[in-house]
Amino acid sequence: MRDAPPLPSSPGFWRSPLRGPRLTSVLGLVLLVGITVLFVTGLVSYAAYNPDLAPVNDKTPDKGLLGFYLFAWPTNPQWLYRLTQGVHVTLGVTLIPVLLAKLWSVVPRLFALPPARSLTHALERLSLLLLVGGALFEFVTGVLNVQLDYLFPGSFYSLHFYGAWVFFAAFVAHAVLKAPAAVRNLRRLREKGEEGEEFEKGEEGDLVAPAPDPPTVSRRGALWFVGGGSLLLFGTTAGQNFDGPLRRTALLAPHGGAEPGSGPSGFQINKTAAYAGIDTAETGEDAWRLVVTGSVAGRTETVRLSLAQLRQLPLHSAALPIACVEGWSTSDQWWRGVRLRDLAALVGYEDDPPDVLVESLQRRGAFRHAALRANQVADPRSLLALYVNGVRLTPDHGYPARVIVPAAPGVLNTKWVARMTFGRL
Ligand SMILES: Nc1nc2c(c(=O)[nH]1)N[C@H]1C(S)=C(S)[C@@H](COP(=O)(O)O)O[C@H]1N2
Ligand SMILES: [Mo]
Image 1 (tube, protein in one colour):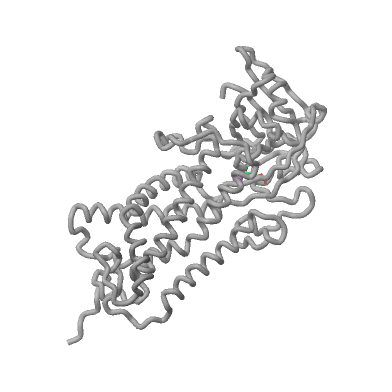
Image 2: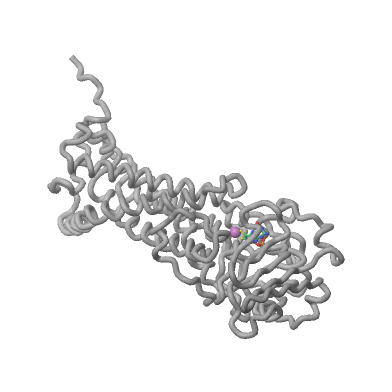
């Protein structure tokens, strides 16, 4: 009589000769390093929004203690956010094949029976559920936000933020439990070679197929395959942080691959004026006014400036990039406009400019307003820009006036500015 076909819960069901301590340990250690970097750059990215400054900046107002680490985001070096967010998104995309391979390498355990042998075992499996579910959730929400920014519901930030903490708690527990064995496994394998090695319980020996199929690819070949996938993703993503021909290699980047046009205004545009619902009647020289308000020592002062009047103020230049949370960035552009601290001085803040709330003509959308911290206002390179690369701002880059601040995430660089309120946010 023939045996019944094995079920996924029986070890004989899994026949790939690739599974085992080596594959799982190598992939696990790559993820240990990579995901730690993702977590840190992710937290840093959130801090860069200055969420503790004002409700308009805070995308996860119920975070409570999870905001314990927030700090005042600096303005130096001016490429800071370009680096941290570029690393976050590029590395996240690059690690996708490694994550998938790692999950594949341990998939027999998903079906292991009995579901729980003891309370400890039950807890361990529960933490694995959070680990695997959390990892998939973070990668999927991250990729969706980068790729489908226009479609993603407003909750991306909170989903990705809370998901990161749930995942990371499980990840730390898992890494503490598994990393020593992973290192031991790799060391032992290097010393004694692959075959016939006995692995202790909990050291991934159970992943070795008891009745393996003949190999179709070596383990080294499989690792090259995963690495090649990562390299391909890296090569089609990283270019969105550079100019010229390199940018055109960013085939996977939603904006990066598109030709941003040429000439002085030929750099990445996130939301167009049409998308933001900006009415040209409101931005015309006659209609548009900048309303600047401040209140020093209980006295509120308001100044209204036409575009012509703004142009009469001292104009300054600064070479600064735009770096978006989606992971694309521009090289330094040559902005020219009025210093934010000079605008603060107009309404009474002679020396120490305070925080400011910047509001756009735009009526709907989460990015129509943003708050900037005093250190950002005080930086002499922080401008209300009227020109870029020697020409007037185009409507899509924020005509007649937009904010540009060194090292800040793109979202704080409000376009089509109409109103600035200094102090008392
Ligand atoms: N009013 C307004 N300002 C805005 C936005 C917006 O949607 N509305 N998008 C922000 C985001 S997310 C980025 S990355 C930058 C992009 O500026 P750019 O389109 O000139 O490259 O503008 C910022 N300023
Ligand atoms: Mo952005």
